[in-house]
Image (tube, rainbow, N blue to C red; front, side, top):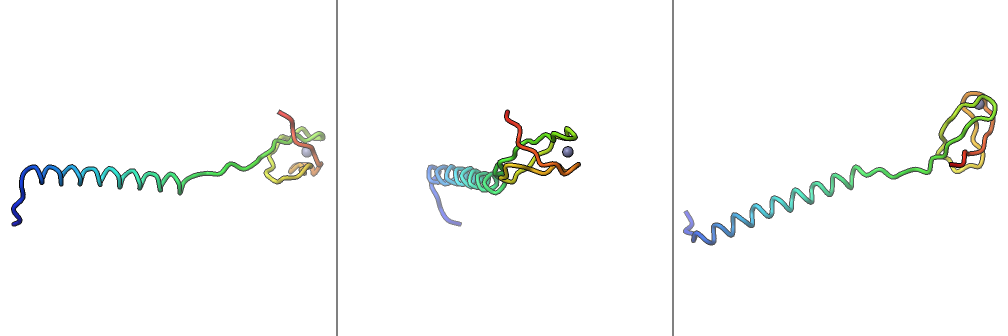
Length: 77
Ligand SMILES: [Zn+2]
């Protein structure tokens, strides 16, 4: 067994606890970074023919209604 002074043992214990806390923080930061969600530019459309409301993430001026096929402009909010 290695002889060690009491104050050295306390410092080593505190450093070990600090290392565990830092490791948990890094692990949590990596998890948050891996689970991030990028917002997509989604626009709301309302069909002028059948009044169906729908979303479209494509960057187009007109989007085709999924029910009747009419092309519509995005709604201004
Ligand atoms: Zn429609």
